[in-house]
Structures are given as C-alpha cells and as structure tokens.
Image 1 (cartoon, chains in turn red, yellow):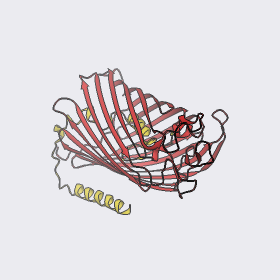
Image 2: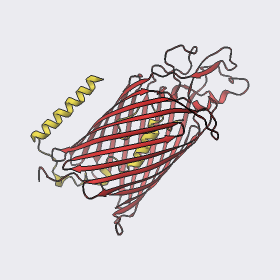
Image 3: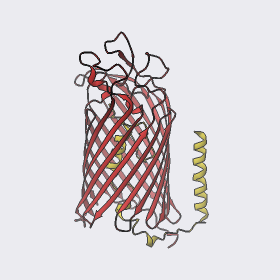
Image 4: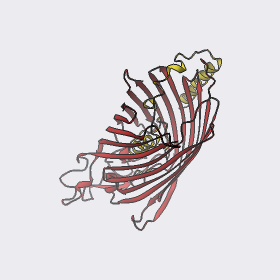
Length: 377
Length: 77
C-alpha cells in the first residue's frame, strides 16, 4: 500500500448555477453563470460553462472622459479531462465576447501525482488572441472601431505537497508575456494645459506593446486540532512595466456538523506604479509611453469576505450525491496613492477650488454578493 | 527572464528524476489522510466562485497570474 497503485481519480460530476452582483466605483456588474462537469466512465470528464456579465455605469477614469458604458460580456468555456494512471491531462478552450473586445484562449495542462500521491506537479500553457476595439458611438447606438490585436502566452508550473497529516502546501509560478495593443482605449492621460479652464487637458494613452510578468504564489493549509481549516496565501508579482505587487490572504473554514460550512476571508494587496504612469503629465507627449489608468497607479486594497454553504441534501437523493447552496459577501476597499479624483470638480468655477494635481486621492469601496446552487451526482 | 525559465525547468527535472528513482518513501500513509480528504481542506471548494473573484481582482489590479485560474476578456471599463 505504500506505493499505492491507485490511479488518479476525477472529481464528482457537478452542476452549478451562479449569480453575482458587483457594485462599486460607479459600476454595477451582474454576472450569471451556468456550469456543468460530467464524468464519462472513470477516465474522462467534460466541463462546459456559460457566463454573461452585464455591465452598467463606468469607472472614474472613464467618467472623467465623459462616456458611460452599458455593455455585456459573454463567455463560453469548454474543457476535456482525461486521466491515465497518475497523470491528468486537460485540454480546453474559452471564448469571451464583448461588443468591443473578443478573446479566444486555448489551454492545455498536465498534472502528475508522485511520491505515493504526496506530491502533485502541474504544468500548464495557454495562449490568448484578443481583438481590441473602441465603441465611439453611444451605449444605444454603438459604433465599434477595431484598434488592434493583443496576444498573450501564459506558462505555469505548480506543486501541491502533503507535508504532514494536517498540513498541505502549494506553490505556483506563472509567467505571462503579452504583445500587441495593450492599452485600455477608454482611459486617458491628463497633462497641464494653462489654456484650458480646468488647468489640464486629456489625451490618449500610449502603452508599450510588450509586457512580461512573473507571479509566484505560496499557499499553506492547516487542519486545526478541531474540525476546521486555516489557510495562508502569499503572492509576489513583478513585471517589465516596473509594477511590483504583494498579496497576502488568510482564510478560516468552520464546518458545523454535516449541514453548514462557514468561511471567513481577509486579503491585503499593495502595488507600486508602472514606470510610465503619472496622474498629471507636464505636457502631452512628455514621454514615449504615457498612462493614467488607475490599475497601473500605486495602490492598496483590503478585502473582508464571509461565506456560508448549506447542504440541503447532505446525504443525497436518488442520483444526486448531495446538493448545496452558498452565499458569499465580500467588501473591497480600494485606495489609490497617486491617482486623484478629478470627476467631482468639473462644476463652475472650472476645476473647483483645486489646482491640477492637488485634488483628493481617489478611493472607493466595492461590495460583491455571490449566490450559487451546486448539485453533485 | 530566461534565467528564471531555465531555473523552473531544472527544478521540474530534478523533482521528476527523484520521483522516478523511487528514492523517497511517502511519510504520510494513505490511511493517515482522512483529515486531508475532508472537503474543508480542498484548495478551492468552489472553482466558479474562486475564478470569479480572481477575475474581479485581475481587472482592477496590476498583478495577474499565479492563482491557477484562466482569464478571458477584460470587463474592466
């Protein structure tokens, strides 16, 4: 039994209905997703999921450019998984479509159990080809101009390791390289302009057309002396645009008998700005590359989350092994360290009482509700 | 970059070679894995929810990757 000859096992068949609502920073996003994974025999499984994001409103940097978004994103994902002995092979394809953005992503991964199933090594590769456009019409009379393509390749290596009978560890390294049109066309830079009433004007962003990033994530999960689990996750990120990001997350999972599982989550994230980011440039074209996208600004955020899962069929019924319903509420507090809030100061007198570059720093809170029904069979 | 990639490849090769030689005995026996098999010890009990939250963060932060979830689209206006 020490070198168990047991082949790797596919997870149970499962179907999910998922809904989520995100509100924050002037945006409302409703997400609907249906997903099913079915085992065919013991060695094969197929996964399919269909997702719709309905986006309304627009974030601060889009608002300061005076356009409001009402859009929809649809995503189809299909995966086939095959197990042979200790190896699991997955081949998949995902297509995401918005009026002004189309993305196609094939991916492949291979996972190998070893050392008497104490260790699992995973290798993955995906390549996405995106078509990037801009809707310069209105939300109701769209006119999409296609601006270019972006290509992305992702390579990942993962290791999951049983350390003791109560402790597991995991490490993932992922390198992503991009090439093509990488800017967000809806966001603008601003530069000092003494001829403008507000003291500044807006202009198009100019991004480098390549980017390479490396993320390393380490995870530990511990089974406490009573029936509960604690998880700690740390991720280090850096890229060729000089962004360095650090993420730290703690989770606590507490089941109550076989009916309830409660989970608490705390996450902290901090990043430095991209080298070509500035909230206010001295003049237009003052650098080769110029960005004022708040995702590239120095920032930090905190997340608090709570999740409850209730098994309403804990012991199954007919073909169903069990069924659960889950509710999850998270709040994220975003704080920007060099991105200023210029939206509210457009009224007369122009620019309000703030000189350009002295406006208050931007911050916002997002609330995310998730609810889903899962059936295992 | 290329140094990092070579390093990762080398590490994977060392792990695989050691595994194939069968030199390491599993120190947590299969019958000692009852707690690890508890659903509360799964890395992601709900992949849909985890993937959704990854997408939320990826659309609003400069960092990406390392979490094992595949992306797609932007949804970041």
